[in-house]
Image (cartoon, rainbow, N blue to C red; front, top):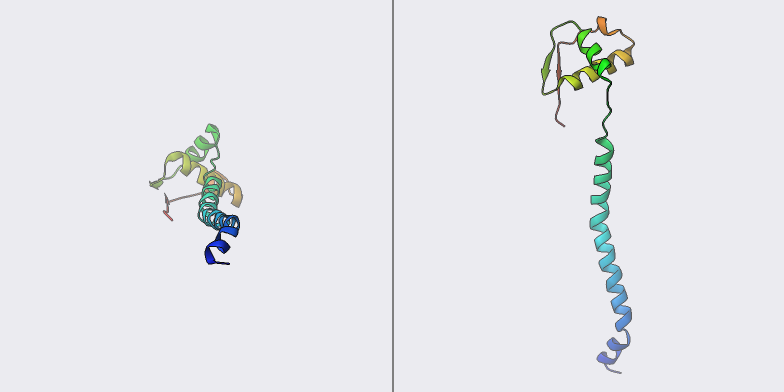
Length: 103
């Protein structure tokens, strides 16, 4: 039996093995991309703060507040969260500045 005869008899098996290897390689490349997109989507969820909470947080603050790369809505949200988590009323909190950190 020659090499040519052996290869012809194993033709379909070799094709299946290569198909599996190609499929595994594609999955190896695609799955991490998909997982990073899912994780990124989870971290980008937004929470809508009612207008009254935003206004109360900024108006009841009453001090000078420097916002660095932060909009008023985000600053109000941060102030409200700090007030809620610490149990300190908004009128008693004093912030000097709120700065966005790029990580």
